[in-house]
Image 1 (cartoon, rainbow, N blue to C red):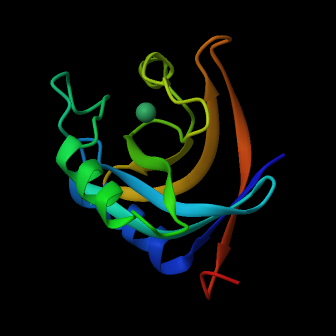
Image 2 (cartoon, rainbow, N blue to C red):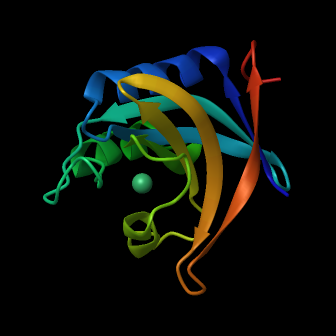
Length: 148
Ligand SMILES: [Zn+2]
């Protein structure tokens, strides 16, 4: 099973974003790299407005401009966009059918935070396989320091 490490500050920012966006879904990008096979580390998060043209209470879309800006900033660095995060207002922190429909990028890590009545609950990490419509959980490690 793969492992993804995130700092307490980054996790707090993601949960705060989810609470602030409630009852809409929040979203953003996860920037980082693979330290060793199967060991991913998030070095920064990039919050995005939710650009979904569907109901933003159960769908999200990262702003193409945010993604473009992040990719440009990452040129000639060892970091990459390794995934994204979004919130599930009043739903569990596991991939929905809508998420499965959107899982084009098989290597992407999905971080999902459950928000219950504007309060952040658990956050879980997943990888989605659109071909089989299954999801695989990753171990989410929360560290004080960040890069180790
Ligand atoms: Zn979702």
